[in-house]
Image 1 (cartoon, rainbow, N blue to C red):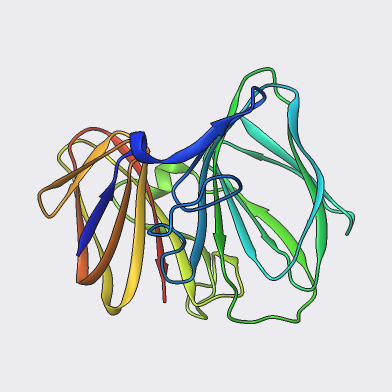
Image 2: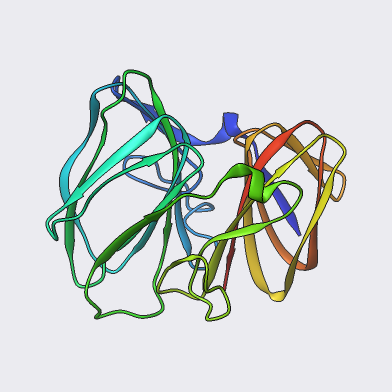
Length: 232
């Protein structure tokens, strides 16, 4: 099954400093048909104006993955962590028993991010934060695991959920496969470009909700950068 969610149909709100689009119900946007996809709870497409951002606020019991598409985001939390994550790189915050953090665009240009929330399968643990560069060249023509709760993914940023976040960069005409399996779900979004999955065109910033597929086969119609989340 493939359910296309065109970018134009997403909920959201433009706050001036923040232009937010929501693939799933979030904040003032609620669609009972789009509340989650397996363990995947949130996929926000955020554009943050220069020198603005999210002031300190708390979270608990959530795995929050930030994929930076353009610009950079600067993180600070009450554990003493401070870090700047640039375009193409990833940060993960495991909220655990509770954490307060801020996320600011300290740059002179707009920052564009995908913010992905996954419900943890392990709770009651101390909060943590980490970031890691993932050069786009390493993802050329193949999926690379960015964040994972699976023991086999030793090079990925760790999360506390039965889930995996992968990404690939494809040239027009290239095809890449991801083994999903009948008991798993996936959600795929092209950050740029356009791809085709089983005859369905998925354009930049559209969402594709996938299930009941042994293998996800993605063909690039244009040069594309894609992110896929595999969840239980």
